[in-house]
Length: 458
Image (cartoon, rainbow, N blue to C red; front, side):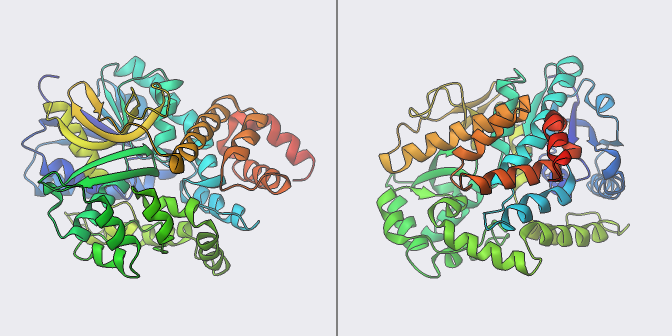
C-alpha cells in the first residue's frame, strides 16, 4: 500500500462507530488515512446520518483532514478500498429480539451467538457476507476484510470456506476482557503478562504467565472462579463494566479447577446451562431480554449522538456491551499496515495451532499480526475434558454454515441436533420452524420451506 489509505466500514450506522473513529484517531501517526467510508442500508439511513455526522465532528475536532463519506451504495464505497471492516446486523435489533424470545418461549436458551438464536444469526448473515466478498473480488481485490459481525467465527469461516477469500480476520472483544480480568485478579499490568488463547469464537480457553515465565493460570482460576466476589474484584478499575451480554453467575468451582485452563464468559451457557436459562427466563417474563435492553440503550445513545456539540465518543457507549471491539479492529489494521507483529487473539485459519482440529478450519487463537496477516501461535492439544466439546462445536459451526449457504432444511435440522443448547426432537423442530417464519424476510435461501410452513399455518 502506498499513499493515503481508504477504509470502508459496512454497518457504518452502528452505535459502535464512534469507538472505531476514536481508535483511528488514536493511531493517526501510524495510519495515513485519506478516506473513511461508512456504509449502511436504507433501513439504517437515519442512524448512518446521525453517527456519521458525529464521526465527521470527531475527525474535525482532532484536526485531521480525513474525508468521511456516508453512503448507501456499497459498491461505490468498496472501490479501491485498502481495508474493509464489517459490523452489520441483518434484520437489525428486532431480529435479535426474535432470536432470543422465540427459543425462550419454549424454555430453551435464547442468545445472540449461542444456541438456536446464534445459528439463525448465522443463517441471515452468511449470505450477505458472501455477497460483500464477491463485490470485493471485483472492486478491491487486494483489501483486507476485518470482520466483527457476529457470530464472528462462523462468518469468518464462511468467508474463507465458501467465499474463497483468505485475507480475512475475525475479531471479538471477549479475549480482551479476559486479559483484563486476569490482570485484575493478579494485580499485574496487562502488558506484563503473556497469554495464550485457544478454541473458537465465544468458546475459547486461555492460560497466563507472568513476566518471569511463571504460569499463573491456576491463581486466576482460584481468585476469579472459586470466590463469590472473585470476578467483581478482578474487574474493579476497568473502564468498562465487562461483557454486558452475560450474567456473572458463578461457575462450578471444582469443575473449573479440574479443567486447569481458564474458560471464557460464554462457557457459562455450556457449563451451567440450567442457571443461565433460569436467569434468561426471568428476564424474558419481564420483557427484559438482553436484546430488548440493548435496543433501549442504543436509542439513548443515538439521542446523545444527535448533539451538534458532541465531538468525542460518549462514555455511555461502554454500556452497549461491546467495549474494546472497535479499538481492536483499529489495532489490527495498524498492525497489518505497519507489519507491527502485535500479538492479538483473532479468528483465523488453524494451520496446526490446535492439533485436535483440522488445519483448514477457522479457530480463535493468539496470533502474531504481520503484513501477511495472522500467524497463529501453537496451542497444541486439549485434554479429554474439553476436546470432545470443542470438536462438537466446530462441527456444529460447519453444519450451520452449510445450511446458511444451501438453504437446506435437513442440514439446518442437523445443526440444531448438534448444538448442545438445543434440545433434540419436537421442541427443536418447533423452534426451527418458528424462527424460519419469523425471519423470512432475511432468509431467501429457505423461502421454499418457509412457504410450506406458512401453508400449513405455522
